[in-house]
Length: 119
Image (cartoon, rainbow, N blue to C red; front, side, top):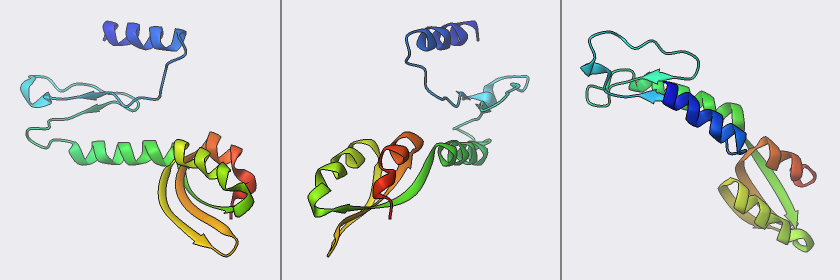
C-alpha cells in the first residue's frame, strides 16, 4: 500500500493524477479477507468472486463523469464537430437539413465547451 500511495502522490504532484478504481485480484488465494474502502474492489477473476460488484462500480464511476448529449452542428460550423470527435465517445452521427447531429457520451468539460451546440 505504501508504494501505491507514493505513486499516487507523484502523479498528483506532476499533474497527471486521474480518478482510479483500485482492484485487488486473486483474493481467493489469501487466508483473510482484504478490507477495501472507497472505490476499491477486491475480486477473484478466476472464481468470479465480486465481479458483478466491480462491474457496478465501473458503471457508477463513468456515469458520474460522463453524460449522453446530442449536438447539432450547422454546416457553417462543422469544423467544431472535430473537437467532439476527439474528446468524446460518439454514439451516432446523422446529416439532416440543418447540419450534423451527433449523439455522444461526453465529460463535463466537453459538455461545457460545446454547450451552444446542444440540441
